[in-house]
Image (tube, rainbow, N blue to C red; front, side):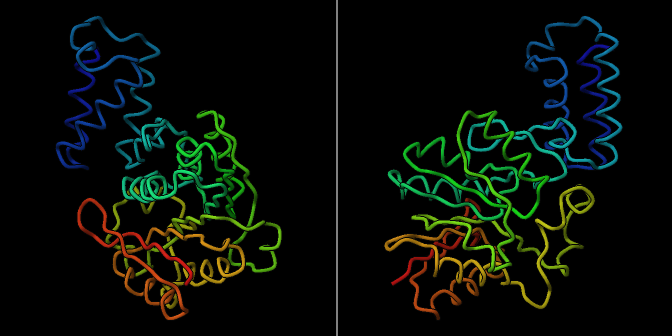
Length: 280
């Protein structure tokens, strides 16, 4: 089997699970990973795949056809121009989170201290440290498995992040942290009612603890982050939050009712997906 044949086979099989363009992109990504060649190089090289390459292809193919996300299959994802290791301990980095990071970087190029709450793969603090080298960047997560992945990604991208295990919902643990100039978070914000709208590759593989929030309290993490920021945000500091588009106004209102100034930020599709909050 040549890599071109393998690409066509996988692309056609994945077309039953994904849209045509996405199926093609996934197949291309897989073959590039296996062959370590771009598509134009593979198309020029019509030599048969080696036995080890074919075995790897069959392994990946089986996992992909079982809805396992390609990022978990290949253990790689790309975020803000950097490569990250990912597994089922962490959410797969998403484009809207890149936009959140972009706002922080452009608005705070000389920030001195940044905290990421619920860091997961570490994509947020790694990208921030890479672009705002003057900042001391810290990140916390309740999951030990996630923190191992985040540490691996800091090493992979050659940045130093202060990682620590912390349950933000447990106020007794807050004293273990100093104060910060910038607090950023992409906390759980999907309600159980929305679960049916998610694709199988999300529901069956991505960590539910990082996705879902109680149905009766969809603003749980934002309320807690507000009270945390009341204690731990430096004067003149800012909070940046990724939010469920259905609750952007509610998050903004909660901060404003408590005396803060907020701005709702839209993503590239015009959806209300981020909130910036500043104490007054």
